[in-house]
Image: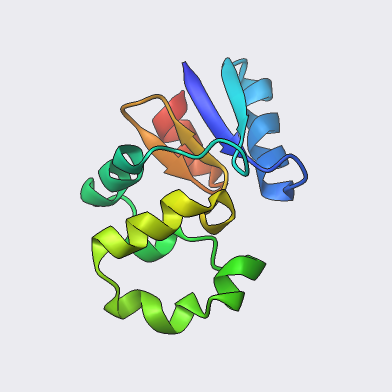
Length: 117
């Protein structure tokens, strides 16, 4: 089963949900503020080479900016970054879509099509 970790009011998440609905692909929703992707899923996404550590962060989010992570991320160890991502779902780029094997982050219709169709 595909899981979409999302924020209900996020316009990017709404577009991704609409894409899955239009394609007739079943999914379950999880509010990223309450339930976050597990550490190993995030690690897997980075290790696969498809996503960079920076790409995993919601760089336009208020919390990211408040914590001044733009200046800190490049020198941060992977485990420290994973601790941060695991600590607050608002730091994770969304929507975070996974079936336990594959992962996409954000709304890129080409990537959604190649991964989930």
